[in-house]
Image (cartoon, rainbow, N blue to C red; front, top):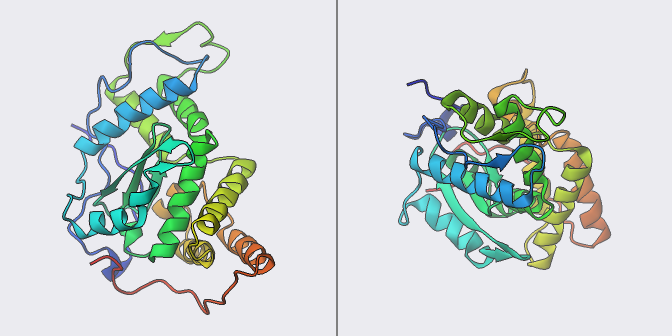
Length: 270
């Protein structure tokens, strides 16, 4: 069985945990019967997201309830299971890939290696950004695009088409396409705004968003479309976005200079 995996980034001691790359495995039958390709509703996106995430949960190492990663994530987000009209559920994948994603069904998945390099405030900002994509229904657009790519359909040819089941190769393509989705500049800007407002409304340190973007910028320096860059195509111009956060925080009187932002040499989750 061929394993489908998403990009990989090693950060020396930061990622020397016994984790695996995210595994999409064999996912025949994940996609619901009768999902329409052209008239793709939010309900379609929610159903496809839930079934796909449920399958990925079964095929990846999910941190257990007493795991330090789960304990830390719950401490940060326990009060945000209902957020802005959304019902959210959170889990940690113990994988070497550095990423986090949220789906239309409210599933939020955070990768352990991301938690190893981000402080609490930085994680709040990153996950707040992903929640923003769900609230703004950007994840519906991403799932539709991934579904169409996986089924080898386009809007012109699929107006009356339905796909009863995607085969293993197609499901792998859909999952890869979704996790590698690039949002528009407008969608990214709106998700950034949502994240900042989320931090501000909950009295979190908004400078965490600045530091998170600075770390993403540091990770991508000198890379040539590495696994990290590919996974964070949806977060381009990290340095510019860090400066945008700083400008807004200064305007709001919330800016506190964090000094030089660097990547940690040891894991931040223990």
